[in-house]
Amino acid sequence: SSRACFANFSLSKMAMLRVRSTATFCGLVSAAVLVNTAFAEEEAANTTLEYAAPEVQGLHWAETFDGDVWSRWSHSKQEKYTGKFTVEKRKLEALVGDVGLVVPEEAKHYGISSTFAPIVGKKEVPFVVQYEVKLQDGLSCGGAYMKLFDSHGVDGKLEEFKDDTRFIIMFGPDRCGATDKVHFILQHRSPKTGVWQEKHFKDTPSAPKDNLSHLYGLIINPDNSFEIHIDGEKKASGNLMSSMEPPINPLKDIDDPADKKPEDWVDEAKMDDPTSSKPDVWDEDAPMMIPDAKVSKPEGWVDDAPKKLADPSAKKPEDWDDDEDGEWEAPMVDNPACKIGCGMWEAPRISNPEYKGKWHAPKIDNPEYKGVWKPKQIPNPDYFFDESPAILPTIDSVGIDIWTMSKGIMFDNIVVSDDIAKAKAFADASFRLRKGLEEKQTPKSGKGGMFETAKDFATRNMIAVIVTTLILVATTVWCCFFRGDDGPRGPSEDEKRATRQKKRQEQEKAKDAKDKKDEGSEKKDDEAEETKQEPKEEEEEEDVEEKDEEVEEKEGGSGDLKSEAE
Image (cartoon, rainbow, N blue to C red; front, side, top):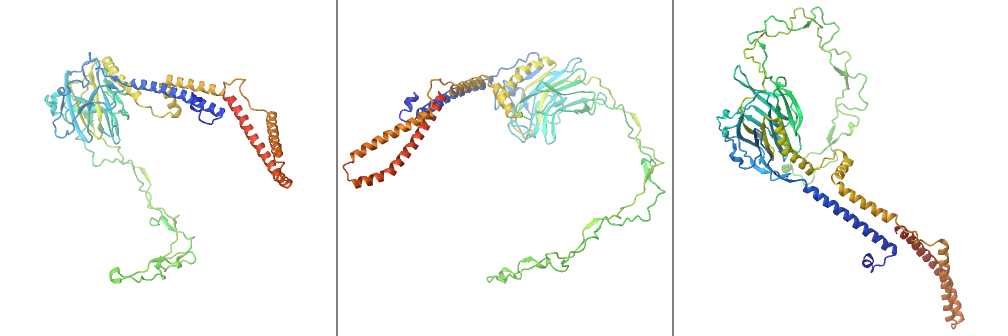
């Protein structure tokens, strides 16, 4: 087919061979590309799945935002909450058709809540809360946390939920300025006074900074220990008895508010030595810096000459009008007399070796020192000791009360449970499935450089890479190594010399025939013609020899190349 295509072109055999080899090579590479594309399309198809609602049996409460969401959730009617949540699909879907609760606009307050069957803390039973957050447009400044509370705090009216509604647990990511943490705040009620007080976890982890879905989980164990999980991995842990600020249980003894420091109490441990006095040679008025006496005014320095003066060569323009333009003044130029310097000369200043500064008496131990005064301790009238703060009070509602400068925040798959294993199983059927698909959809960052990027591509496209490699290797071997021993070769030096000699003989015969034909001409003309022909013949012979050598070299080289190609 390649012969037919190039039949109308004046191509040498070697050129034809090159074209055919190139066409074959390109065809094979194209086939490899098609194979690779097919596998890439197959992989792309594997980055999404149809959504199926996960099993919720065994969980105390789960919210997947399927069905009639607004029959279960209520927006706060407080004036400050101008933002309204929506229920939408993700911008980039992994589980196709899955929806969540979305923040549609930035720079607004959002308040929403939902209620469920009350869950009451019990001995030997853990408490678990977990939910997914996807920051589709990032999070520059704002929160994505939740509050678990008792709806009796709003008299059962969820539309009254607001920022100061008393909660039991506040948990989730928050980022703005220097703040970047996953909150865990527990409100604990004093059994002595009935006052609720916030207890903040001191060593909070930071939140992931990408736009993928992440699972935030809090587990409070019956032994008062707790764990914060992100994507199912423990990122922080502590104990309610020792890791909260202020502590769950107050101090047993406190400062006596009625105790006052005596007026004659001396709490200065050191005092000025009364026996010391300032030395006579101590000059407190000596300056810190003095003129350098070793430096003198440069010769040629003019003290009373100005650094700038009016340009004596300047003249007022002829069209200058003093009434309209004001009084004309010549431009200022550098004073030629100030090449060395002008004005009042001052020596540079150096540190004064005699400078001592203000004198102070040396310090000695104060014989009247009584120590640091502290008020006396008295029993704390509000003291109590809660040995099981992990047994939480009644919780029957979840609320989201946030202000954010980022839109696109999505909440999904909220779980409240007392069974850690079932909460994990729910996460495996929802979050884990989504996470694997999202990782396939998102190219990995090039932290490992070009080698890691190539390695990752080869791993994800192993079959296509192997097929492409085999085709390239086979094509290279075919083009470079498979040539027959009986293939064409270039002429040797003896053959080249014989060819040139044969052509010269043919040229001489042709010349003799021409001479015989012209014998009837006059002798003078013959001699002149012969004289004329001799240099011309020599030139023609030289030209012929050069052309023959070029042709033979080309044919010889073509033979070698053709042989190698075959």
